Structure formats: structure tokens, C-alpha cells
Image 1: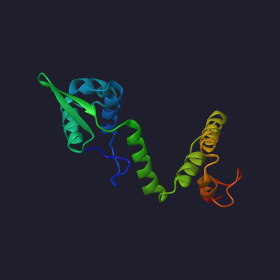
Image 2: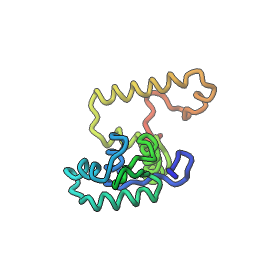
Image 3: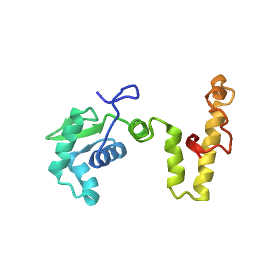
Image 4: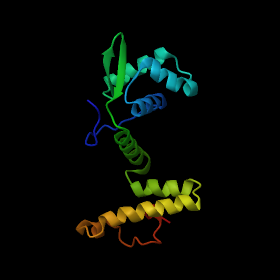
Length: 156
């Protein structure tokens, strides 16, 4: 069974597993040969490696297969957004003590963000805030003293 948002175990994917899932998310379903053809140019993995990885991923509930003639056709059992949420939650938990503001602060400070990037981030924040305006808990959720000039992550 695939991991859900409510499961305590995060979805942890290696680079090859993520590459395989990206192929399946894009294609909907694919054979080992099709997955291999898509990932081989950038990864150099053998078809047998792809087949083994798909079997392991199926045992973890990440993919499933159906038979078509003599071939297995694989389909993802976990959605892309679900995988992203779980992986970001895991990184936030492990590297930032579960503090999403610390993660955002790190991204803003560590990445080279241009004016367009910052404008896009402001727009996302404004849209998110607009969705939550009028919500009784929206004002209660804001950290004390958190205004436009407050540093991200609560530290200067």
C-alpha cells in the first residue's frame, strides 16, 4: 500500500527511484524497456537494474504492475505531489527540527534569488494569505511580532 499523508513513515526516494517515478508520472504507465530508454541517457543504468529497482519499488508499494503479454507494465501508486509533500516534510523534520520557516529562511538566504524570484514568492504569499483572510484561526497562527520586516525563521 502506498504511503499517504497520514502515514508516519516518509517517502524516501533515491535518485534512480525518483527518475523512474518521473517517467511513470509523465507516461502514466511504462514497461521496463520504456523506463530504461527514458532514464538510460542521463543515468547509464542497465535494463536489469531498472527491472530490479521496479521490483523493489513494488515491494514498498510505490508502483504496481499488470501483465501485457510477456511484459510487465508499471504504474506509479504514489502521486508526484504526495511524494513532494512527504519528502519536503522529511527534510524539514530532519534538517530544520520540523520548522518550515527555518527551511524557507535557508532557501531565501542560501539561493541566489533574483528580483523575479522574489516577486513570485511575494505573489505566492499574498495568494496564500488571501485564501486565509477572514479565517478565525488565521490571526492566531501568525507568530507574535511577525510583520513584513520580521526575519524568516524567527532569527535575524
